[in-house]
Amino acid sequence: MAPVRRRVLDPVHGLISFDSDGLEDILWQIIETPSFQRLRRIQQLGFSSLVFPGATHSRFAHAIGVFHVARRILKRLRDLHTNFDEHRADCVLASALLHDIGHGPFSHAIERAFDDQLSPKIKAGLPRTIRQTNEQKSHETTGLYIVLNTEIRDILNRHRPDFASEVVHCLAGNQSQMDLYRQIVSSQFDADRIDYIMRDRMMTGVQSSGFDPAWLIENLEIHDPKPNQEGKKTFVFSSKARYPLENYILALFHLYPNVYLHKTVRAAECLLVFICQRLLELAKEPDAHGQTGLEKNHPLIAFTKSLAAPSEPFDLAAFQHLDDSLCLAALPLMTKAKDKSLARAASGLLNRRLPKCHDLYQRLGPYVHTKDINRLWSHLQKTFKAWDPWEQPLIDKDNRKVYQGEGANPNVLPLFVQAGSDQILDIAKLSPTVKGSQDFRFWRLYTFPEQNRAENEINKILRQAREKS
Image 1: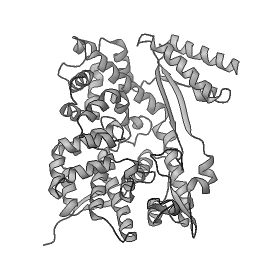
Image 2 (image 1 turned 90 degrees about the vertical axis):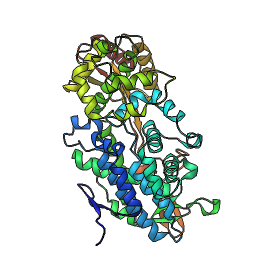
Image 3 (image 1 turned 135 degrees about the vertical axis):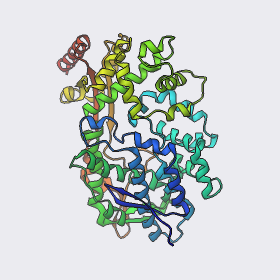
Image 4 (image 1 turned 60 degrees about the vertical axis):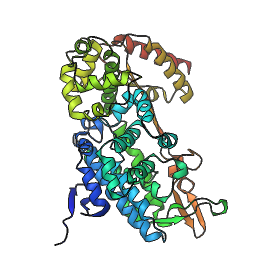
């Protein structure tokens, strides 16, 4: 009797199958672990469902989708490459599945709150060889720690000895290790991006980020973009994929102003960041229960206490208790906190009573140079930092580039396209649209209705800035 294949019916990719033997059986065993199942309880887009009600999909579904896309790209690589490396391919598939295993509640929002305290503790617990090469964000570093310190390590090592270490090195790799295989895991055209563009577009309902992944994957070739300089073999898109590639770049970029960096979504994220940072401060006090409204043994108190103590190592057990549902259930309790700024933030997040947005770039952009806005931003930050937390506005700043071409970042590979029989060029040199597109940036302040002092100060400084311009 033929072995039974495991199947997942995915709304984005359709039927995703796992073989019942070999590496895919190992990966299925990982999916069934508590560490991986926790991803079911973490929304892919954090608070985006406050604006896009359908965007309640999970990191769990995304991780399986990334595995599927990575397998498709590996099939293309296998067709192209005479020296296809099955060992490296195994690392790619395992890394694709595990790339988000370290995410905390509400995905990137919690990362913004705890990164300064969390990253040093996690890195201290990683092997020295990983610490030296790791250039990742805190959720990616946390993922390395989880792979090496949970049942996932033992399951991976059933595939072959020390396979867990191979996977961790693949996940933690830097630019010097950016071969064809690692590009599938992390690059400007990787399995992660392909899945989340497709999935987030579908679940939010936005129509501006469509692209053709099948055509792009089928038009991948392998070349040395700088043969006279002894460069490395890398993925290059055929000339037929020039305009679909341009469309892919813009599809990814448009998700940022439309979804990920939407002012209301970020308002909710700012509230969560504020709540977490207040918890870090209040957890040190003897009356943490009364100040926060949470029980002494609440997982959020346990986790923030461990983070607040510099001498304590990373508490993996406390971290793995955290998910979206636990944080949401804590909000009604925190609305009764003695700390009135914490109670207000918890109530606002619970009931979607979000603070008002003041976007300095939108209000000053036509009048003031970006450098002057940065100086103004620094002045406002310094002013508000001295205020009581009850009066302080929430602050939020970000900048998203459309694309990073040659020379923009030594740690990021550009996307190359065949421009002729013997010419390979960065897409930015072929596409005026990509080259001429402007970054999306913002400097935002958020105020509650009762924060009249902050709102008056913001309006006064903006008025003065316009008068000087």
